[in-house]
Image 1 (spheres, rainbow, N blue to C red):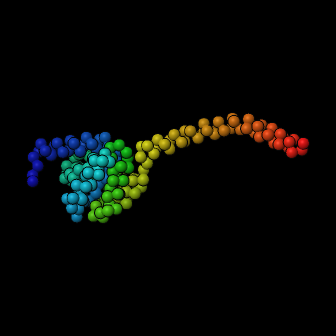
Image 2: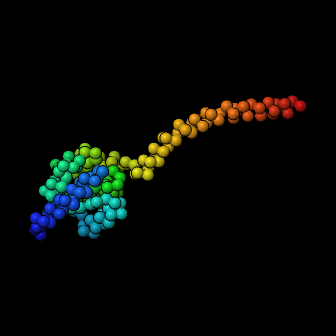
Length: 176
């Protein structure tokens, strides 16, 4: 079905808007996927807050032009699906990785994060990026470690004095 010029402009504007705010993107070839599989993937994407869209290659190239995802225009060939991570850099990669475990027909062509295009083989590395909560927990642990060590260091002389007095007391009680 042919798209009207207004429809094409709307698609390009929508994808460009999402791409301008996204943290990372995954381009995958969906040849061989059934409609049910694609519907399930889209449902999982909504749950994971990943924007996913099948877009014509020329429209996708125009949509990512001027964004940090322009670096992956060479991968925009053939039937492909675009997945943009809106909240966490690794969420689209995790979604695709988990889907591929159950369905090997989806082939990752390229990834982009921070304006850098990555090969499809880097999917696992991007998928292992920490979630926002994991990153905050790691940051808090790093920030808390020096304070904890300082408190232990300050409390150690008092504890050592108490242990020394207790040892002297025990020694005098055993001698008596």
